[in-house]
Every structure is written in C-alpha cells, then in structure tokens.
Length: 512
Image (cartoon, rainbow, N blue to C red; front, side):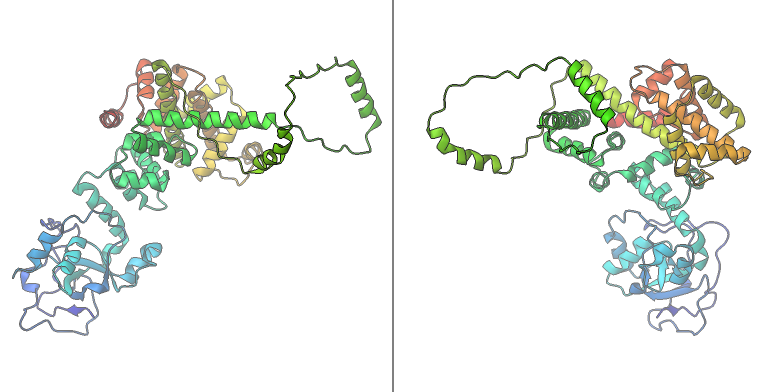
C-alpha cells in the first residue's frame, strides 16, 4: 500500500520553470518537492483515505513500482547514490510515477508484462539505488499527466544527457512504434531524417551483429557495410572472419562473396556433370511432331564417338576388391572444404571495395525513396517535374515499375490493393485520382533513376545520376555516406550538405 504524506502543502504544484536535474540523475518533468514534505522519521506519515491525485507525494514500497520500458539509459554505477541515501538527508528529490492503468491507456503493448501498481516516470537510478541501500520504500510524486508523453520525454532526456552510440540511437528511435521517420526526426529536432533512417536500418542486422554493436565490438561504418549483404548469414560469416582470422572487413566481405560465387559455380558444374536420367517417353506421340523430330535427326551430323582410353588389364585381386569399392561409394560423401578466395591484386581489391560501397549506397538511397514516398506532402511539384522528365526521356522499363510498386506498398501509399505491378498501374490510370497518378508517376521515375544509378556495369556516374541523388538530398534529406558516392557527386558539382560532411567525417574516423 502506498502511504500518502498528509502534511500542509503536500499538493503544491511546481512553478512553470522546469526543475534542474541533480547529480544523481533526477529527470526532466518532475519538480523537486521541499524537504518539509519528507515525513518525520520518529512520528511517521499518516495514512489517509483520500484517492491519489496528481502531484501527491507518496511513500511507495519499491516492489510496487515497475521500471519504465522506454527508458533505455545505462544505469551506470549506483553505489555512490546508494551511500548518499543512507545519510540523514536521504532522498532529496522524489521519483515520479504513474498508475499502471494510465500508462496502459497510451502504451498497451508495453504494459502487458507489467503487474505492479505504478510505472516509473523519471528517476530509475534513484529507485534502483534504494534496493542497494537496503531500503523498502521510496518517496514518489504521482504524475499521471505524464503518461501521454512519457515515451517521448524519456527518449529526449536520454538523447540530450550524453551522446549515445549509433546503435543506442537506433534502439531509441525504434521505440517510436508506428511513427514515420520524418515524424521521429521532427520530435527529436534532428535536421536530417536520413540519419534516423540509417540508424533504424541497424535494427535489420542479425542478432549476432546487433550484440556486437551493443558491446562496441562492431563499429557503425562496418555495420553499414554489412547491411549490403542480401543474405544475412553471409554478413555473419564476414564478421566471424574479421574476429577469427584478423582480416579487414573489406577482405572478409570479398572472401565470403567470392567463396559463395565459386561454390555456386561448382554446384552448377557438378549438376551439369551428372548423367542424364532417361525418362520413359509416352507411347502416344503426335505424328507431325514425330516426323519433324525424325527429319531433324536425319539432317544432323553424326555425333563423334567418345574417346576410349585403353588401360592395362586389372589383376585378379581387383575383382575381389569390387565389393569394398562398392561399399566405399555407398558411404556418405564428406563435405567439401570451403573454397579459398583467389589472391587479388591491389587494383582488384580497390574495384571490389568500390562495388561494395555502391551496394551500400544503393540500399541507402532506396530507403530514402521509400521515406519520401511515405509522405506525399514532403516534396514540391517543381522538384518532381525534373525527376519525371528525366525518366520519360530516358525510358522506363518493367523492372522500374516492379520496384516502384514495391516501394509504394512499403511506404503505405499504394492506394489500390493490387498485387501484380502491371495490373496495379493500369488500375491507377483508371482511378482518375490525380494525386494517386502523380504519386505513382513519381515512384516510377525514382525507381528508373535509382535503377540507372545502381547499375554497377556503368563504371562512372553522369549528370543524370547526379541530378537523381541531388533530388534525394533536397527532398528526402538523404546523406551520401560512402566515399565512392561522395567523390562522384563532388566531381559532378553537387554540393554536399553539412550533415553529409559530418557523416563523412564520422565514417572516415571509424575507418582509420
């Protein structure tokens, strides 16, 4: 049972000025009550029957409070706070709590596993320190009014308290469930929503790689490279080579890619070498078909006889060894060792690195396109005209329409539920919806431009590719991150934003 401190002025509301956080990690949004509100140790607080109200100061058993699932802050060393709680002054600033029912109104999924009566708002370090100090209760101010915004407030507080790692940022952004990338950037006052998208992409990595990032074993720039693998298992294999064989990540990625390619080629060769199994032909054959086949066989040149290599006669013992050979052939085949990657020249390594960077950059731009399409009001008609014009003059193709249809579905802006891309665009044209037609046209134009920019058969970009990326930078907040892409854009006269330069500096520092 929570004990309410029944003293004059216990419901005093704080002034409009925000309370400053104390050295023990106070927390935004909770005003420090006066020391006079602390119940006297000898007399003890009185228990009242008045229902709890906002700003009431309560004395709550520790086990009736649940930590807030949206507080991802590292708790750090709590010993110093625990020692301070044993001093005569005790807890100078109460924690803030809200009723579980009120928390569940706004975050039902997060509240499913919570059984305690209260959920922490701010002050988790102080609450945990009470356990270390051997205390059983804690002073708390009731703040049900915090429930609608507590998720956002906690993320903001942790964001500004110290500079989190990129993976910690990803986890914090991931708490904004059901919210667009643009909205997350706006809530946290982040200039480039492309930064938010790139952090969220880290959550697509396999769990082994996410754990390596959490332990700070895997850096951000290397994690971005590993996102270029379509097969996530290959990404894990590359990371294991880095850890186990002291390879650079670029060499490990090439090793995995080349090994996979050679393995596939060997499988194809083995498949082709298998003897053809004669399939019994049906007895009834169309007469015209049979006649045509006979004529073709008659007209074909005679097949060359297979070469026969003569071998000396086998000794008699070989006949006795036949059963053993048969048994050996029936034994399960031993797995072939993984093929070693061929030795590459310096030029080949540089070319492989460029190819990897282009794959990563293409995946980044695709996310920027989907982010842009998710918000039809995020771009201006003037900017879109150039994108559509370039696509029309350059010519669209089926691959671009398939990609555009996929992007619109991922962005939640398809408008019409049709699975087949060609049928979808026919339905869009028949819909007579100018907005939908315009949005689908933009998606197709972006997909056309991206298909051209991502084509690694083209060694260099031209002005059309630069214009495509320039539009993504302007309209979608895209930040070019790879060295190859930045060099290509600079060569073609595209000025990089401050966010792009900062991101480039961060990537370059990690690559050293």
